[in-house]
Length: 306
Image (cartoon, rainbow, N blue to C red):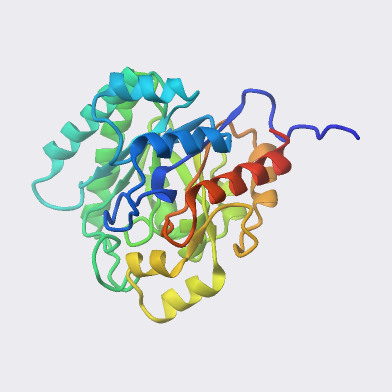
């Protein structure tokens, strides 16, 4: 049998996974008590090369780096929340970003992934989409200027800073991303494509890749259960309610609606290089994390030859 030709050249992409399969970072009560050591061990057992940071991880970067290296893992990204669109949060946002720069320099791996959470509805017990913020022109200006400032900080350290469009935030739809792209310097602000959030917001992943291929430097591979998504939108669910209902799942799950074969081929055709990170906020009591992590990694191996 002929061995499959890899979709990406050797070393061009790395596969990571987020700890949200095991414990949620937005809603700490979505948790069945799986400890840090088991989480990262199962990530490695499933065959991933890296992971993002979660709230159960050791705070000391040197200790965390040692624990990850013990399992053959490296850091794919921390998450940074920005607050440029609300009052009196500019300096706090810059200080938080500086701490994460320091963290990445100590970890010696990973990209910076961030999103503007000013007025976001996604962490609130309210209808997700109807209460997502609609930024004024002034708020857009402050966001664009702030992101350019942070991007310049990251560039000094050769760190890729990737903006993550997100449900319930002011940068959620394709139209929002287009405005963000216009207001930011492509040399300073890259994009993190989240396949699930984009579909949830009514966007098209292939169109996004075609339009922004030169700016996509980081990807979250998140699948969607279409019937659950439709119900979440119809019933005005909160983000947490949608998660608990099972709106998200992993690539390779037959219950998911996204065609990751086409998405990955599109990324490969545009020469994408970087982290491909499996992310699915799920209830671990209903979706055994190791089983779903292995399902995703096996699917990615079959699809990409890597």
